[in-house]
Length: 343
Ligand SMILES: [Zn+2]
Image 1 (tube, protein in one colour):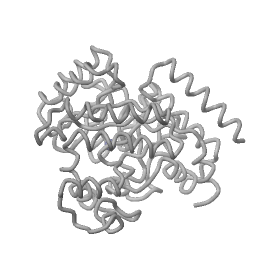
Image 2 (cartoon, protein in one colour):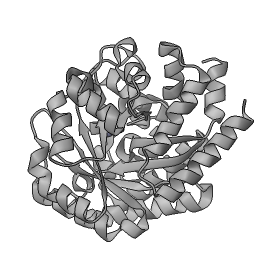
Image 3 (cartoon, protein in one colour):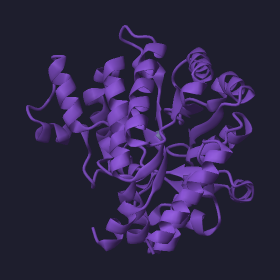
Image 4 (cartoon, helix red, strand yellow):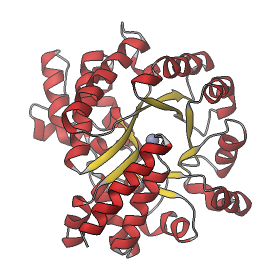
């Protein structure tokens, strides 16, 4: 790491795509497992790191998913999710992330004696505590899951509507996009839209550009998670530029899960320079062992982005956020002021 990284770390930042379940501290996984007599493959925090995080040179989707499997059952508990929500916000704050949209899928965690609403209550409690303590703005996105039933997506959207005043700003569709079409969940997303809940959809990550088109045309999504295959359809690409539909891109995650071969081949810099509204996010900073500052630094390292260009990317994140127009304008003003003072 060089001086550029230190400068980026000090800049105010916004993350739009960060999964709560992929952001846990190894120390926390270790402690929670110990408290609950949950069997771990390692006897110390250091050793556990090898199982719940992937290394920088990880190029295997299987290894990436295996890391999640090691600790996932621990997350099916409101107390653990409360702690996770608090700590993930604190970690973001320590990286100077002033605005952080976190997301998780209640349907995946409400499987062992707790309802989706129980788990959600824990998460909201943790987020609120962190907001009060660190002054970080940390709204929540609820994920529906492609491989789960359309009814569970409806239930998720209804929870988002019920708790919208507690900081839920949007719903997402996550999961295996190669085998489960988004259209199956159309009813849930229609309901979200009718009620003013914003929408983002994981599409064009492992799956093709057709999934991006489906997310826009069928689910009427406001943003796309990843969307790295957007370049495969020039008409759609031009449409995204014209309509300024934001893409939530995540560099290291794409490399580690092997949906992109190398940083050099990642479409981010082309999209940015062509004027598409691209943003940089962490995805699963715990499992990937990264920070948002690190991901922004990669723009400099691999694409020779100048500091001014990196600042423009950060402002893209603010502009593409799911917060209110008023808060967005305030954040932008605050960020620009800080950028100015750091020249
Ligand atoms: Zn994601």
